[in-house]
Length: 295
Image (cartoon, rainbow, N blue to C red; front, side, top):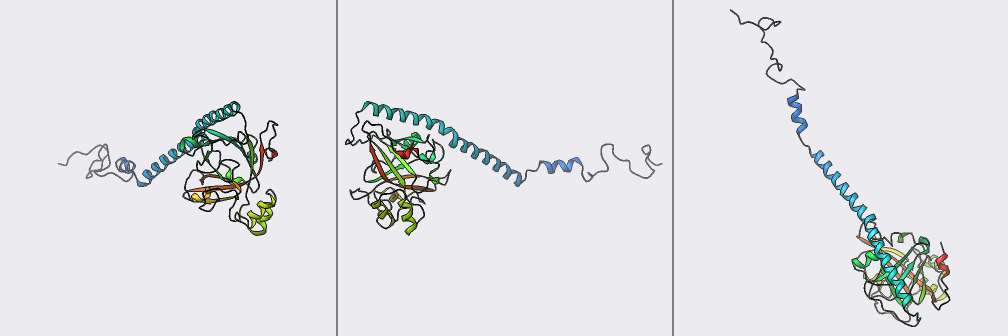
């Protein structure tokens, strides 16, 4: 006697299981696909890492570009107020040499090409704390208006970013430095020009003697703007580009500005050199340089 078969099942055939077909899973069954979906691939891991890195980079950029500006803006305002109070409380004496203390503001700088609202108090020193308040004076270099090299460092991104646009300066653009006793007008030296072209650029803003020195003399190798390495300390020498650190009366009065390059990196340094062309003593007349009105 044969075994009974399930209703509707032809004789001689095995009945199908109620919860599956045969003993093996058919292609596309849930068991096999579940194993494939649960497998984490290298591509997925890499994607997660890149996404996380992107978020962290964005947060860092936001912090550097925006949040630090708030703190530096407050520090700059305090430096400006301290400077103005100092000037108001001390009698102006054009012959008096003022030696600033580290961490204190002693001058203001203006770059008319960046707009009438561009002005920063310059503090003495280039430590991290000093530069958070604004541009900082290299302590061992000369002071504004003196023979030699008045050198200043500043951030390019975040912390107020006073030197963010240094790369936009052109030959003969004015950089005005105000001290307690005087206004000093510096002009950016010719950039990427040589020979007669360099001379022609110098003629637009320098004195006849300065033109000769910049075109063919001891200042002929000094470019108005260039990129160099962080260790190039000769950029702030009394005669830039040399190892001369002692200023002499025969030297011109130069201003040097340094900042990191490129943006969001400190791999290199951007350098800008300018030469003093005008000094206006503060004698109570209220006279200011016409250069402040330049665009």
